[in-house]
Image (tube, rainbow, N blue to C red):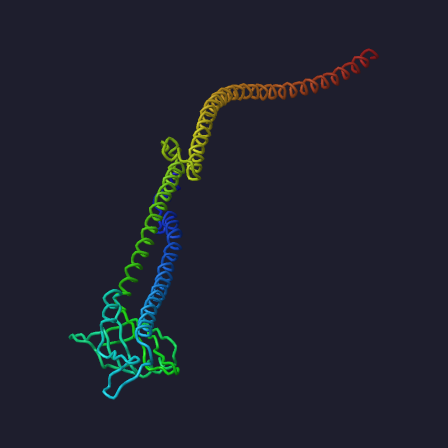
Length: 352
């Protein structure tokens, strides 16, 4: 028992204990799920916001187109002086409408005639509107198809914008330009990043709460393990933790079973001790009886020795007596022969 106890105490404790394994197995899936939720959520959020931005830009672009159509009858044309007209009204330089929309919506609005921004609320980094600037050829070609166009990353004056182009179509079906509505990408990305940070923060809080709960459960398991370890080391008088005994879950059941095991082992050890004491008493009695028996056997041995010695002496005396009897027989035979001889001689003498 001492050797086993020494081995158990001297054994190096592994780094990945059962509590750490449970914590890892519990948190790893949650961390993976949270990472997936954050990744998928951020993409879904970005897609949703971009969809809303596209819708908002479309509303503004269509509203500007409808406003020009309702305010001014006729097609878009360009006179000899280079001014653009809607019907009979010149709209070149008239920025009141787009400035009002920009002020109310926060979106940058431009009126494009052909491939050139006729009027716009967009400004240069150093200041001043960028009237007269043109579009890239690829973008202009797509506008010429007559279909609305939404771009997610369009560089305008060294600034990235979400841009929506609403084609302007004359009565003959020709595309003469477009309404350009734009909003900076940076502001939208900041909003997305802020919301993604909130999602990640919520996920981290959930992971921490889960880690705390698992740690509490792990500590309960560790307490049960330590209690069982003390029982294994023979500390059957260890006091159980009443708080653990009062738990209503499976860990409480295990701890209560461990306490019952401790009491059962204590009873078994007590019975064994009592049996050992009784066995010791019986052994002492047997030893005393064996000693007494040994003494009696010794006395018997001595008596048998004396009897053997007497028998040996008697045998010797019997041998001597037998020898003497033989000798007497021989003497008697000798005497008998002599008597017979005397008798013969006496007969002869009588005859003589």
